Image 1 (cartoon, one colour):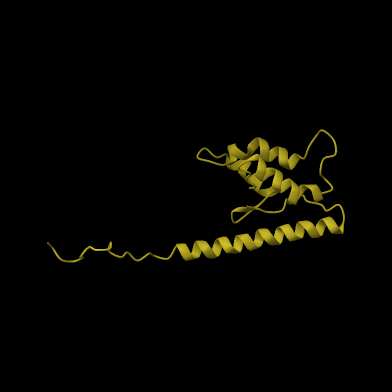
Image 2 (cartoon, rainbow, N blue to C red):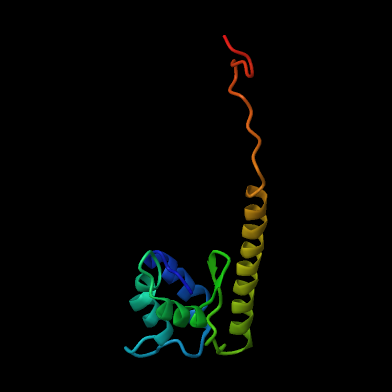
Amino acid sequence: MGYFSNGTEGASYEESVCRHCKHEPTDHHGCAVLMAHSLWNYAAAGKDADSEKAAVLEAMIPCVGIRNGVCTLFAARDPAHAGAVVAYGCRVEEARAKYERDKARNTQPATRRPARGRRTGTGR
């Protein structure tokens, strides 16, 4: 599900994706996708997560690695707007791939070395 940890992150997503969409609200009603995320985000995440709300939110804005993917209801205003959102999607995919590489590197067992100046394996 799309997760926006604060207003700045939500505004950044709106700037990168929503403003290019023909569904972007031009009146006081707002976007139903963003409204659902605003209302249900915290209920769908955390220790008492509501799995049904999480499934609905994931269907609208999928999570790609640790980033928010492109809204599945996105419809470009015109080809130029589509290109901007495709570029955003590519950046998200690149970030996901980097996240996966970093995660794979960090899961390898670490070797412990003795602290400096200490002898190991011998008593006093």
